[in-house]
Length: 413
Image (cartoon, rainbow, N blue to C red; front, side):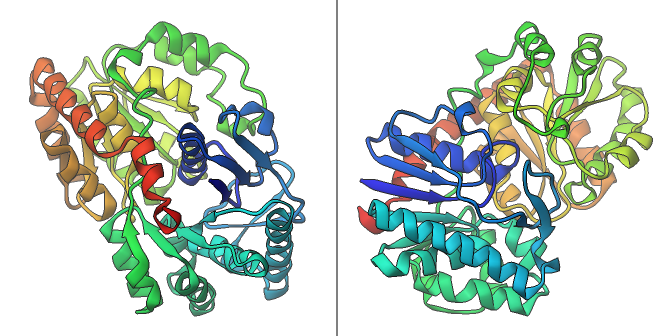
């Protein structure tokens, strides 16, 4: 089949970017021809397969986002902060580029990321050629843009009602979408299709301090500096022993401050352990100031670096305060054979349920997190690894990318 993936952002760094990359690659492996329409400034850096083309249309300087990040060659603006005229110019440019691509080469299906702006772009861009489209909800647009903004809710609702399918990563996202957008025909065409996990990359055998050190010291061209590891990350990690791991944005919403508070209470009882914090974000300076003893901040890491790092951890912690659509990093940790401690809400709780005894949940603040993490750390290392192996087996059963990518083709299968 001829497939189009519309994605308003880049192909590395955050969750929906990685999602797009893996869906395109999995579709290509299944024998389909794929075009990815996105704003990736360095498409040559991504080998998604011989049947995948990456297109970057000129949409103007403004890019609507849900959380402010830096994008090479573009000016990021929170979608709720854009004027009506700015938003319309973005939509017109994006709709026009999609319609042009479909007129030039027809497609059997367009899959658009995010209820906004993916839904409106797909609905209008597919209309001239009557191309069916599906919309993948990611959660970020719901919590960071649509919630509390009736205008954006109206912008999202119509295109969802016209979609051939709407995909949510968890029941939590279905519930939130219904809460914010109300009932509509889209509910009858909504299916829960979680993200996939790169089980070949995130595996226990991939853990290697030597490979990680080499990757951290190598050149990483093409990304904004804040998306690189810190220049001293390799040296900091070389000096530590066993460690607890956090991977994610350095924002208060992600609950990193709760983990640091819990760690200050636990650290004296585990002098052999270090807390490693991987990621970038606007709250980094504040978080480092409250870090406490034996806490190492590394900056961001790419997937190759994380695949060498994650299997080496004693336990991973995903302490997000705000709801998560799925909790990909928890699933990647489990795929790496590592036990996880996650907040007991939203998609994170659904991931934890799927992992069985390889995951622990906590409800509440730093005290509850401290208790849950202490329980895992009290287990003998052999028991933690055995539970981690059972978690990986569950990931393989549920979340391989080829299985997920095939499910996304339901409207044209």
